[in-house]
Image 1 (cartoon, one colour):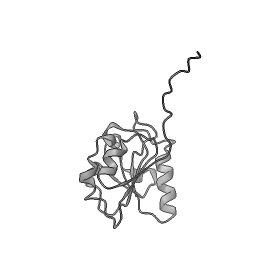
Image 2: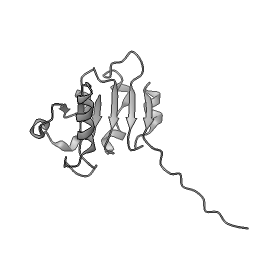
Image 3: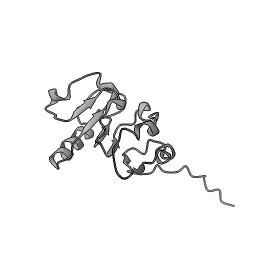
Image 4: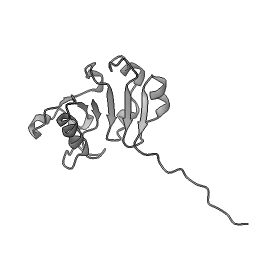
Amino acid sequence: ILILGYTYKAETDALRRSLSIELAELLEREGATVWGHDPLLNGRDLSLFGKRFKHFEHWSDIPREPQVAVVMTPRPEFSEIAWGSLTKRLASEKPSLVFDTRSYLRPESILKAGYSYKALWQPIQQRSPHVPS
């Protein structure tokens, strides 16, 4: 499983209160292999935090094994990923899954690249105000 975004929010490099770290730990306890990428970690070693999962400085350096990508932090870099080129990196006999926990990505480009796409929630649509007659 590839986790995109370890920090607890997009504008910081802080890992305290990080749901991504908690998710990675839970997934590892359940037997999953976890990799991650967060551009704001600036080379920080996650092992300093007692974490065993592997962090990659650039998303294009991930190994071929992950079958699921989980977007945890809404970063501009993640919306600009060339999903078509990433397809060659994610190995799967069936389409890989991109799970967007923030409904941040554009699903069209992900689906076009051959992935399955699931969003945790859908943003509320802007409604026109009701004008009584």
